[in-house]
Amino acid sequence: MDQRSWFHAELEDITREIVLLAAHVTEAIPAATEALLTGDLDAAQRVIDHDDVLDDLALDIEERCYRALARQQPVASDLRALMTAIRMVAEIERSGDLVVNICKALCALRAPDLSPEIRGVLQQMGEQAVGLHRTCMDAYADGDVTLARSLDLLDDELDRLHADFLEAVVRWGEDGSVRDAIQLALIGRYYERIGDHAVNIGERVRYLIEGELPVHGSLS
Amino acid sequence: MSRTAAVILAAAVPTAVLLLVLLVSWRARRRTRQRLHAATTRLASGTVPESPRLEPALAELERAVDQAVSRGGDANASETRLAKALEAIHDGVVLLDDAGDIVFTNARAATFLGARHGEALVESAIDELARTALTGEPATQTLELFGPPRRTLVLSADPLDDGHRNTGALVVIEDVTERRRVDAVRRDFVANISHELKTPVGGLGVLAETIVDEDDLGVIRRLAARIHHEAMRASRTIDDLLELSRIEAGDSTPREPVAVHLVLAEAVERAAGAAEHRGIALDLREPPHDLVVRGDRRQLSSAIFNLLDNAIKYSQPGSTVRVGATADPAAGTAALVVGDDGIGIPRRDLERIFERFYRVDRARSRDTGGTGLGLAIVRHVASNHGGEISVESREGEGSTFTLTLPLGDPRRTVTTQED
Image 1 (cartoon, rainbow over the protein chains, first blue to last red):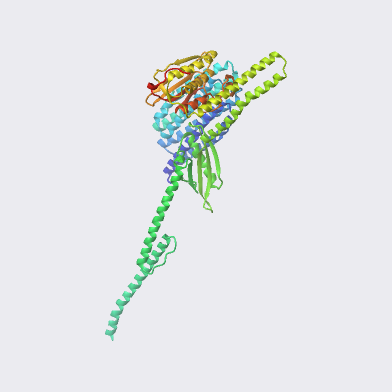
Image 2: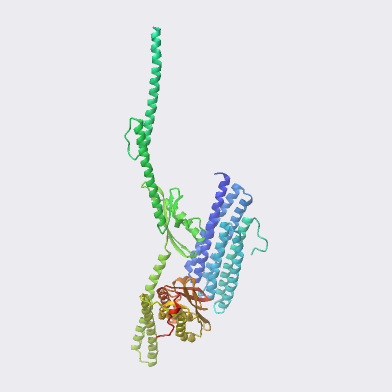
C-alpha cells in the first residue's frame, strides 16, 4: 500500500474509532440518568468503572492521529481531518468524564428520593443530552453541516431545561437537605456541560467541512 | 552403382522424413491424449479409463466437463439455499475466516456493521468475541443498549474447524429484549399476586388473634375497624380479579353501538365522589352525541372509570382531571382521553403499568387503596374491543391515557340509559 492510500485508510479507521468512542458516551448518558432516577448505586458504579474503557480508547485514537501526522505530514483537508479528530476525541472524552461526575454525585446524595418534578426534568435533560450527542456524531459521520448547525437550537432547549431544573431543586431544597440540593445543582450543571461539548463537536465538524474556525463569542 | 545408390537415397530420404514427421506427430498426439486424460481425471470425481484414441478422450473430457458444471450448479444452489436459510433466522449471523475477516453476514447482523451510537458497540463486541473464538475458545457477552429503543442483545462466538485446524468463527447476535420482558412479567406477577392476597389475609389473622386475648373495648373497636378495612381491601382485590377474568373470557362481548358521551357521563358519575373527597375537579368535555363506538357499554365505562380513578389518586388536591373524546373518521376510530396534571409515571415503568398488580411505587400505591388491577382491566377492555390503550406521561407534569376504539354506526345507537 502506498503512503497516501495508507493515510486514507488510517483516516477512515480513526473516524470509525471516534464513532465508537462517542457510542460509549451516548450509552453512558442514559445509563447514568436511569441510575439517578432509580437510585441504583451499583449501576452508577458500573458507569464509573466503564470510563476506563473510554479513556483507553481515547488515548489509542490520539496516538494513531499523532502517528498519522508524523508519517504523512498532511496538508489542507487531510490536516483538518486529523486536527478535528484530535479535538473531537478530547471533547467526547470530557463528556464521558461528566457522565462519571453525574454518577459520583448520585453516590453522594443522602436521600435519592427526588420530587416528581425533579425526576421529570432530569429525564428530559438526559434525553436532550443524548439527542445532542447523537446529532453531533451524525453530523460528523455524514459530514452534514446543516445538522451541525442545528445543535445550537438543541442546546438552547437543554439550557432551558437546566434553568427549570435549578428552579425545581430550589423548591425541593426547602424540604430537602442543602447538601443534596448542591449535589443536584451540580448534576444539572454536568448535563448542561455535556450539551456544550456536543455543540463544540458540531463546531469542529463545521470547521472540518467548511474550513473556517468558529467565530469568537459563538463558542459557549 | 551410384545411380542405384542415388535412387535408394532419393526414396529413403523422404521416407525417413515422413517417418520422422509421423513419429513426432504421434508423440505430440500422445502427449495431447495424456493431457486430456489428466484433465478429465481431475475434473471427474473418479478415475477415467485411458483411451488410446484422441476422439474418445475428447468425448470423455466433454462428459466430465458437463458433470462438473452440473455439480458446480448444485454447489451454488446449495450455497444460495444456506445463505437464504441464514437470512431467515431471526438472529444476526456473522461468519469470519481464520484471518478474522468477515466472509458472511445476514441482513440482521449487517445493520450493526458500520452502525453509529449504541449499535456501534455491537460491532466492536463482535470483533472482540470473534478474536477469542479464533483462538479456539467460545465466548459470550450480553449488551444492554439504552437506544432508544432499549434492547438487550446476547452475542455468542464459536470457533469453527475442519477437524484439524481453526477455519474461522461464527458469531450469533440474539435479541432477547422481548424474552426478558416476558420473563420479568411472569416472575413479578407470581410474586405480586401472592403478596396482594396474602397481606390482607395475614393481617386479618393477626388482628383477630389479638382481639381474642383483648378485654379493652376501645382497643377491640379499633382492631375491628382495622379488620373491616383489611377485609374490604381483600374483597376489592377479589372483585377486580373476577372482573378481569370476566373481561378476559369475554369473547361474547356484545358489539352494539354505544354513545361515547353516555360512557363518559357514567364513569364521571362513579368517580365524582372520590374526586370531591380529594378536592379534585373533574372537567368533562362532552363529545357530540353522534360519536359512537362498537362495544359493551358497561365494560367501556368501567375502563374510563378506572382511568379517572387513577388520575384522581395521583393528582395533587386542587388540580383538574380532564376527560373527553374525539373522532378520527379517516382511521375509523374514536379516542377517549383522560388527562391529569399529577405526579406522572417514570419512563422505565411506562410500558409495564398495564400488567396485573404492577406498581410503580409500592409504598405509595398502598396508601391509595388501589388493587393494582385497574389498568390491567383497561387494557383487556381495549383489546376485547379491537382497540388499544396508550399513555403519555412525564414525571412532575402529568399523564394522558388514550383509549382508541373502532367507530360504530350512529344510526343504530341505543341512546337511552339503562341498568
